[in-house]
Every structure is written in C-alpha cells, then in structure tokens.
Image (tube, rainbow, N blue to C red; front, top):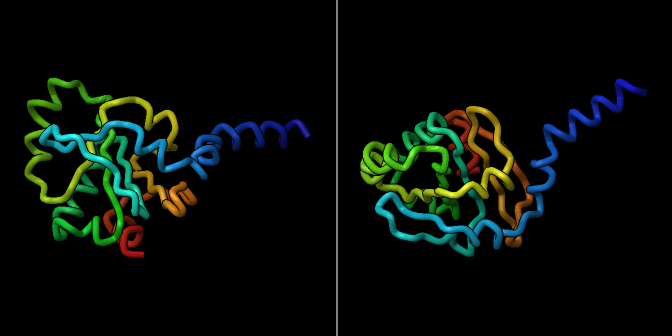
Length: 156
C-alpha cells in the first residue's frame, strides 16, 4: 500500500498542472497581454481552436522553422496561434538579439513577457505545449517536439 501511495503522489505531482489546465477558460489566456515582435499588443482570436506555446528557446526555434516554410496565414487558416513565452529571457538580449530575428518571420508570433502562463499551463522539457480549445475552454493538452508532430497537430 505504501508503494501505491507513493506512486499516486508522484503521478499527481507530475500531472497535476496538466489536469488543472484542462477546462481552463480561454478568458484566462485572453486576460494576459501579448505582443508582436514589433511591440504591438495582440489578442487571441475568439474562434481559436489550437494554442501552441513554447516555453524554451530550442522548441521555439523548431516551431518558427516549421512555420517559416508556410504561408503567413497558415496558422489562422487552422484557427491556431503560436505563443512564445519569453519571460525568462533577459530584456536586453530580447531587444538586441531575439526581437530583430523574430520580426523577420512572416507568421504571427504572440510574445509573452509575464510569468502567469508557466504557472497555469503545463510544460515538458524540450516540448511545445498544445492546448486544444473547444467551447472557449481547454479540452485537451498534448506535447510535441518535432516539426512532423507539429504539422499533425495543426493540420489534424
């Protein structure tokens, strides 16, 4: 019984944030401020079905490389958005190095500078978090790490 209880506690710790994020209202994600790489405020569209979130530089690069091969309206045509959580990046590095590079991409990138997302959205090392939205609530959470997985997630 002791091993079962330990396993239950470990499982709850690992997946607790994932369980808590399911049924999260889209309003909570809309209630934070996002910016484009050009420092313009941007909002999550109401008809969104998929939110792709990168919490790390390397997975963000994978996502940007994939999206850079697509039309600028690719994400919008699938009712999807890409959020890059950059709150851990030093602002001077963001301003001098990252933002000029991100401005060159033709696809929309929602930059997030706060720390709220990481507190309410589950993450996995070296993976993007995918939030599937239905009736303005998170209905499913998945994680991807490759361009092929990302394509399948977006295009279904």
